[in-house]
Amino acid sequence: MISVIMRISARTVRGNISMLATNYLICLLLGAFYAGFHLLPVRSAGFSVTAAMGAFNGILYLAGFMLLQHNTRKNGLVLSSVFMKLGLLVPIVLSVFLFAEIPTGMQCIGFVLAVGAIIMINYEKGTSFSGSKLPLVLLLLAGGSADAMSKVFEVYGPAVHADLFLFYTFVSAFLLCIVLILRKKERPDKYALLFGALISIPNFFSAKFLLMALNHLPAVIVYPTFSVATILVVTLAGVCLFKEKLRKLQWTALALILAALILLNI
Image 1 (cartoon, one colour):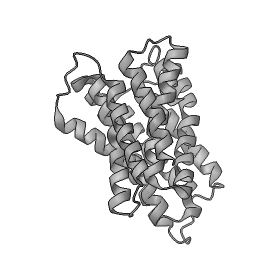
Image 2: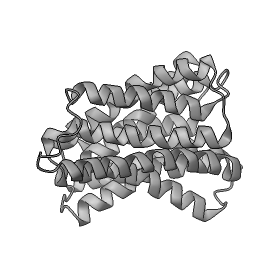
Image 3: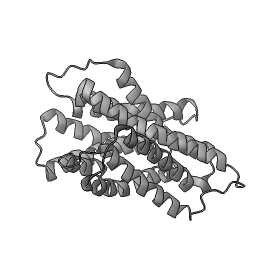
């Protein structure tokens, strides 16, 4: 839903930072609502850890977006999209080596298929997979680290503060957006506010459901499923809503995604 809405917004929105700020503002209000507006339980065990993790996660959220914009300008959409989606390697590696979540043989095959599908579905004939390497690596690390923070909180943070973790994530991202708006002297328009509001609902609940999934399933299943299933839905939305034509390679990639989803969940 986020990708579809942002694609529609590209035709009218001129203030991307304002759109993000609106999105984060509504997300933090939703986080406050689910936390029961009990936002400063300073005597509660683990509160300071929750607030610190959330604030750091918000920095990663916005850093990932800014790096995506920078890489799209410098390295093109294809390379940027591939490296952003390959960010799933970060939480997977973290889960295997730090939290000892060892995947089964079938899940390993599913993971390899998922990575291959990500590269294939973004590949365009004649496109060179070369570019300014450091910004691409930083994009992968920032995006992957933002995803990985949900797993880190699931392991080290108190489960009762999950909604507070989201609240402080979006507070941090919102405040950073305000700083950027003031620095760039960006004037929000009605479309930025409208689409920011529309994006906020799926954005908040995708983060909330990711945390919930990690409470019940290992990260080696959750992250690849989350990533490739998103690609599947977005691609099918492009075909059905925007009348996009897929090449044979992309149809093959979709078939690999379906196979990966099955193997990852065996």
